[in-house]
Image 1 (cartoon, rainbow, N blue to C red):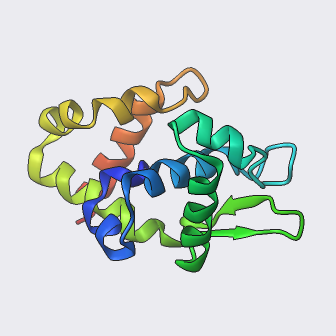
Image 2 (cartoon, one colour; image 1 turned 180 degrees about the vertical axis):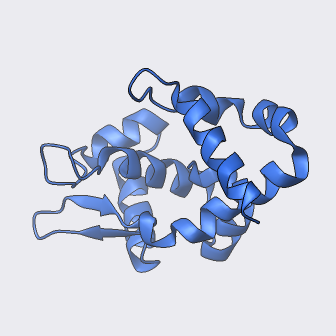
Length: 140
């Protein structure tokens, strides 16, 4: 799932590209299995450097994302993404497009996502993603 690929989600939450990139960075770093118990460990300064933004811009972005209920903070200032609660708003668009475009056109359009999926037990992550979509499409 890449947040900035879903136009309806972006419009609903009124997110800028910076908001999307920061939210996606936090989502990827706040996995439940990380050594920080699922909290993003990257500082505002480091996130800002990654996207060419100031620490203050990242601070404002985090405030906006928290107000919209897309991230949460702990007492020490660490943040984590709670976007999984919104997953149903994001994923169905992929399924709808998969059904409308067909396998090949969909794979071409979302090649960047396909290529970025991690390998699982020797299977390409992109293949697993496509198989999941195919499975869901057949149940429609």
